[in-house]
Length: 189
Image 1 (tube, one colour):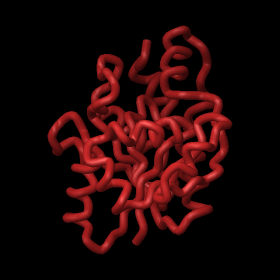
Image 2 (cartoon, helix red, strand yellow):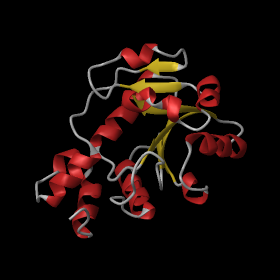
Image 3 (cartoon, one colour):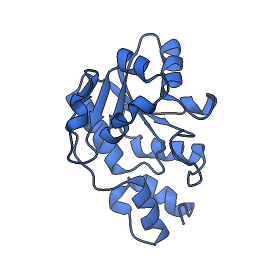
Image 4 (cartoon, helix red, strand yellow):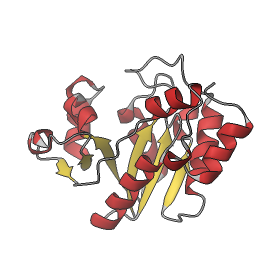
């Protein structure tokens, strides 16, 4: 089975994440997308992160009706900060009958040279790169990048958190169950 690993903080998961995952499933040879909730990204400060279990729960709520999408807490038990290479080594050992690929935005692809064991990642795993703006030049810079023309989504988790803090309605950007969970627990205020 070919699995696309979609790493992220998902703080919170929003409809843009789901649209990208759906597009990649429809237009590639991937059978499933696993949303890997990262407890600590080595490139981001974690002072605005909700606890990992809450973010995982929101991912589960967002994808509960989509059988080809799974929520993964694999990085919760691994050393922190989370490194993609280490997670892939763990998954490859524990799921020997699966083939894994990475899914990432062009902004992350541009920074791959800064990642731990980037050369090994590039040489051993397909990498599906989706646009984060209208620039597609990064997709042609490495033969392991497979560019997917996923739709641009004009929102980010950061913008959603800011809008919630400002009491702006964000219901159109979130799955109804995620929106209800955020409201019920008064998150991001």
